[in-house]
Length: 285
Ligand code: C2E
Ligand code: CA
Ligand code: CA
Ligand code: CA
Image 1 (cartoon, protein in one colour):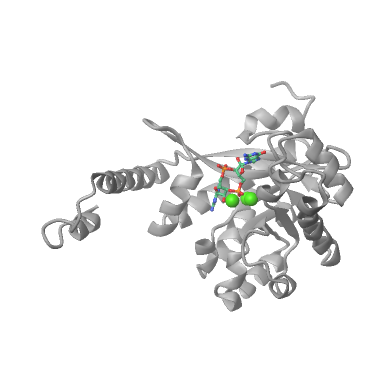
Image 2: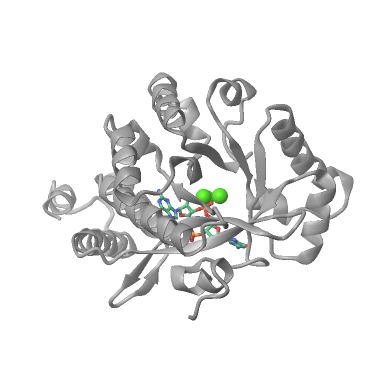
């Protein structure tokens, strides 16, 4: 807080005083200190969205998505607080809490229903990967939860492959050696470079919702998704289409050879207990 105040008061007042900017800044400072407290008090929650196989409709995994039930503001969207966490370094603690919860939950489901073998995907920000001890942290969380490394997927965006490529390569190879799988999130929106994909031990491409949205059955629009799916086949990667909202998108994706999907059509992100009936149907709720 002191830092922001100092900046604003440097020579009396800002050259052009903009009350809305001032308001934004106060908002941000307030959110930042609330987030710090939420992390200390472990108030963040994790919701889970199903990943399904397009061919059969079977749920084979979930993606863990952080949620912040703020005492006054209601649910604060991750798009709002993840950037704050990244800029302030809180992302490390946040990421660790989400990873711990998600692996513990994955292991609980595994015990409820051993035959289901769900994968659990956790989003990892570039900042987390840059930390030297990230791999040790993942190893520790897997050990303490008992969740098998082979069923943990770490999702990251293409930008991590480009920046600091050498260090990232080491990190991903170490994760790979443990058995953890790597997914490239929002694929197609960043610096898609074939050479990067080739060089890194990537297992899964997640096709960004913006491409899936435009699936229309007209060739030009579908070609984009088709070429990503083809790329996946060529490099032996799984492809997951994100953001399926309409039934007709399913047909188009099947036709294009996409294997898996996520989206509101199949299920929104929900608290773990709301998925239990799908995972272990015979157990009482
Ligand atoms: P993402 O990883 O691309 O996650 C997918 C987002 O799309 C989620 O938003 C999900 O709720 C939403 N979504 C899923 N299906 C549909 C659909 O059919 N239609 C539409 N319109 N949206 C759909 P959410 O949960 O608000 O998360 C936003 C972003 O915040 C995530 O994008 C991810 O980048 C980040 N995020 C979420 N949880 C974490 C976390 O634990 N750690 C980090 N580092 N980032 C996270
Ligand atoms: Ca994701
Ligand atoms: Ca995504
Ligand atoms: Ca995203």
